[in-house]
Amino acid sequence: MAREKESVVGRRGLLAAGAGIAGVGIGMAGGTAIAAGREQEPQQPTPGDRTYPFHGEHQAGIVTPAQDRLHFAAFDVTTASRTELIALLQAWTLAAARMTQGQGAGSIGATSGDYDAPPDDTGEAIGLPPSGLTITFGFGPSLFLDDRGRDRFKINKRRPVALQRLPHFPGDQLVAEQSDGDLCIQACADDPQVAVHAIRNLARIGFGTVALRWSQLGFGRTSSTSTSQQTPRNLFGFKDGTANLKAEHRQDVDDHVWVRRGADPRANWLAGGSYLITRKINMSVETWDRQSLREQETVIGRTKAEGAPLSGGTEFSRPDFELKGRSGPMIATDSHVRVAHPSQNNGAQMLRRGYNFFDGSTRLGRMDAGLFFMAYVTDPRTHYIPIQNKVARDAMAEYLQHTGSAIFAIPPGTQPGQYVGQSLFT
Image 1 (cartoon, rainbow, N blue to C red):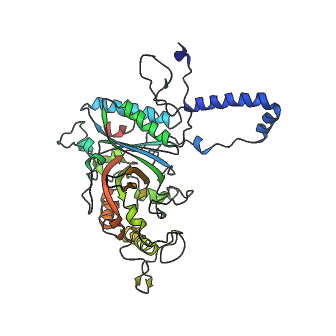
Image 2: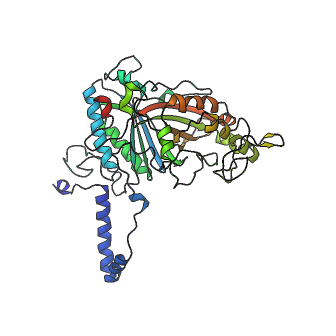
Image 3: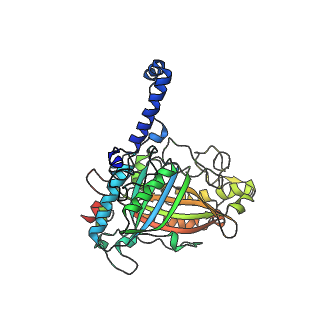
């Protein structure tokens, strides 16, 4: 009975309750002077209290200012029932909408309800603030037509033409256990435990309908998706994503990220959505660390200190690929910045949301570390595949090894009462 009497409150409620208890103690010790001070000083929300709406025109977690932590998971659907798949998406939507607002995954909570039944939340996020959590869902090509050629859910006729498994790129050494998937969930937050809690609970809800195929933890965002953010550094020590698309550049985002209605008549359900490319890129950090600063900057095409192009200026100066030095172009023809620059790729741009990863050490005693690359594009055939074919041969490729690869169609956002991907199934 004691458990049943526990109030059904969310994480924020428990946190607020804890703060209230503390406040009572302070009040008893400090008298009215503290209370008067509180009236004069407006309370400022802490970064952890930040929340983003789950519902909207587009899914959150794409142009949302990139948080600092990631838990990404890909699932195989184990049922052949369309009804069960839809029920899962409905349940995931409800849970995700709650968790992004700092509540538990279910309405009962981790410490209430039937004493002889599992709680509807795992509980490790109790007391933690929302931490800017966003949860983004996607559909892989195999959801439409599996490896045995089965249209399990009668949706293959609506599969986007562009939603095809990525081709084999030069240098790929892919591991099947880190690639592909029927469904994906991207959880980003400023607290790693909040992101892990989200994926854990969604996996728990999906038990019996989906099985975890692979997952990846990430830290230290490797790009900025808002002009309000500074450019971060990757594990090579260089600023990464200086030229990335920013949410405030609305026209560029419309042109290069969102899928337009009519772009693919068989897939108008995807209008307002996007395509997500994920690549696990192991970095040979020990080899990199033995290179001279000159070599490192030549490979990248930017200075390590400021991130400015080697042709001069500051970080955000436009690279001058025509500027000559004493022994050739100031920015080498095979430098990463030149090969990947939009001016060298028919103007194509992508919105990157990558994260560093560090998964311990390898059997050879090397650091198992690198970049978990994620990019959102309007069409992978024009905005990713040709670019990757080129950068796979640039000067930086010598220090990289691609071990994971996947592509997902990201449905548009939902409104209250709808479920994620509803436009595909109706």
